Length: 430
Ligand SMILES: NC(=O)c1ccc[n+]([C@@H]2O[C@H](COP(=O)([O-])OP(=O)(O)OC[C@H]3O[C@@H](n4cnc5c(N)ncnc54)[C@H](O)[C@@H]3O)[C@@H](O)[C@H]2O)c1
Ligand SMILES: N[C@H](CO)Cc1c[nH]c[nH+]1
Ligand SMILES: [Zn+2]
Image (cartoon, rainbow, N blue to C red):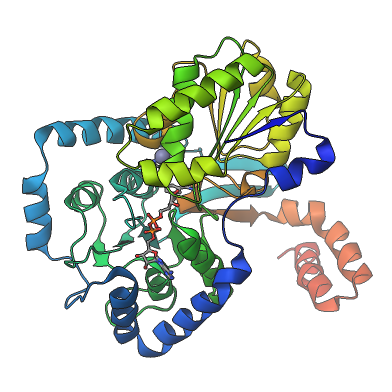
């Protein structure tokens, strides 16, 4: 890991640069695959599934028999763990429901806002190097609460053409309506244009590698909404002498093991903690089954010493991490002062893994600095806010003159007439 002491603010952006490929590196491939899927549908999907996943798929859609076999293969221990996580995710996301907002802005002018579910949605569940069935819970549970009625799920098949049984189990448990064996760019293209087998959706959700993330961004150019760019995982920890080095190292490794392009950063006001964490990382990393992956991410990662908490907070807000862990005596200072982070974890007993699986918060979060302008997935991600209004005769009299004057000033006579005709009708006793 690179240790950096008191970096100057003008060097922060280069020090904190993400190790991910840039959009430009990937865009040409994404565009080519989109074009082909749009033109050739399932044939193109099959071609790219064979190329990138090494699988030859006869039937893209997962059958009932495959789902039943998956349910039977899951241990009762895992089923119980999934149930506990689902229950907490459901509790936290149900509490995010907002009431209908209704206001009489002026006598006779009634305005209100109501939420409506997005009817057709697509969920992308990563499966390249680890089958992230926990992501099914994070997306399908709030989708069900919101009332989305068509929930399509895409996940890459393994070489034998199968999706991991835990993904199928969780999808079935959470009301997914169609499961398709397709991943990567070809899955996002399929849900964008629709193919013979993959339904076209209105909004695509879910994390993925850089190929998936760039594909989701391209999908928006074809009229499909996306949740946000949720790419390779990131974690920034701020720790002082009250932190436990072994805990801090375990958290950093938990996100490093996602992928070689994950980024983990420690910011500290204590040189002692930096050295102790560095030592612990080496000890713990050697024992990990995914050591080869974690090692690459750790090689890119940074241990940064700063003189005080004010500088640390500025640097953290400049970076905008997906996950932010606070292990500091001054946790209120950091939690009140952080503006740019996807999800915040406070205290020595709040590992990031809790949010990944079971505490109840959502783990689909903005990466690559997008925490500066995007929220993570939440209940509102699955709804649209629609406004309504009903105006009485008294109401149009109250606002009519203002509308006429404003329409006239914009040079829009027809707008003005729509009010004038009504005001005259009221004057004439109609
Ligand atoms: N931000 C979040 O909320 C969040 C949550 C969970 C996971 N993640 C991230 O999701 C990612 C999952 O990545 P993954 O790779 O394991 O699974 P994935 O399902 O995202 O990607 C696998 C697919 O990528 C495609 N692909 C691979 N190499 C390619 C190439 N050279 N050209 C074109 N397409 C190619 C293949 O089609 C393959 O099916 C990780 O980076 C992890 O950190 C992020
Ligand atoms: N940490 C990931 C989000 O960046 C989510 C996840 C799923 N499973 C384990 N972790
Ligand atoms: Zn994780």
